[in-house]
Image 1 (cartoon, rainbow, N blue to C red):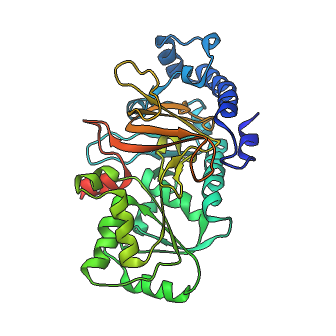
Image 2: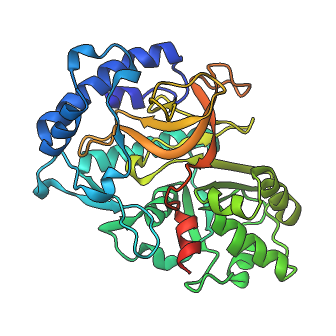
Image 3: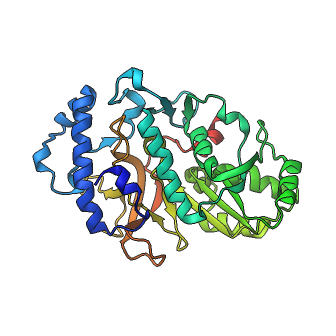
Length: 359
């Protein structure tokens, strides 16, 4: 099966057993491709003891620490084939990850994101409120993770507005008039978690305002470490949105610029899910062996999507717990999990985390 054929399936239709069979083949072939096309990647996995013949399971696929993309230009295409470069979020003075895309990988990113998100919100484009400021999209060739997120999710909206100005102040009249214009319609909202909390929700509370978002659907991600430092839980985040704006449909997602596209969406039961297009493994810090269900570990993310750079198997700097496989109450197949936070001493790198630190 090719990645294109994988995308044609319903996004949560494969059992984990079937996905394992497909991913051993797809990720094995992709590892070999990147080994041949990237001298740097070839050197790294040779040092790790790479041997294609030893691939028996998805767990055998070699992984790269995600931080390597901050220090090395990892790509598997000639420079003249670079269509777009994406960078991770970072505070002032931090190095950022650089992700090099050709047209095929950029197209697959968009198609994968569309497939996953539309399974939650439908295929119709909705009036959209972006809970951010417009200046983020200032460079259309080299996107930050924040800008890439806004642009990627904007495909699901129409007649979009920004709720914040470039000083991160709430544009009350703009939002009020937009909601009046689309009264009775379903509304899509998108933002990064801490920024939704700090610059939208708190501004509404402080000014004693009210927006009727009872027909709203909020997608948000990133920035949980900063919220955790302020003792704000996911449940409190949801409760405040419901109390102040009447917002009932709130779904977070887990993703990163190093694997843009195959995000993990939060289901109705509050669990993050991997789709057919990705997989996840929790690994023990002492020896990187796979964790059991319910055992916290370092998050490894895998996807057969990236053709232009060796980002198909990455060890993140996040800690998570696998909650189950093929048996979530929501009915979606595959693995479901939760993220517990950043590993100790890991850099802040979420879009809204780094904005807050940088202010």
